[in-house]
Image 1 (spheres, rainbow, N blue to C red):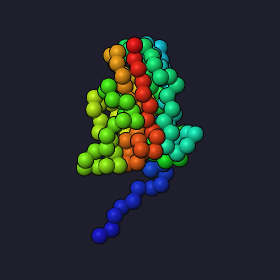
Image 2: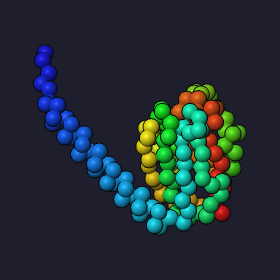
Image 3: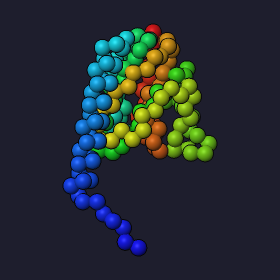
Image 4: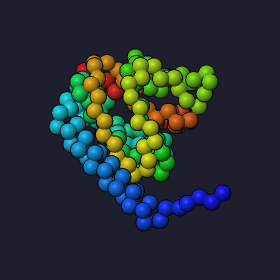
Length: 151
């Protein structure tokens, strides 16, 4: 059975259109999140080491919280926000997947944040303790987590 192939120029055009659309939507969302958020937290993934997650603040104002997530590493990461009294380093391994941790108080997940990409997400968050983490197998154990307190 022979498959028909689209011309490379067609494929390149579709990729270019999707890229421009994604950048425009991301930029528009990032701009609106910054202007209306009560707090903005810069989150860096994969730098200075492969399994680093660094937040620009350990505490911030509750309300609309914008997370500007940048993957500065060389591999894909994810970004998860949990609302839990448990400290980030004390999260327990999953029984069925011991290379990952349980996610009590799950709020949001950004999957597959690729190297070099930046994603902004704004969430309405109440006062309390939050954990920011990457829960790809072995990443939390490697140090990809941070505590955040919203006041």
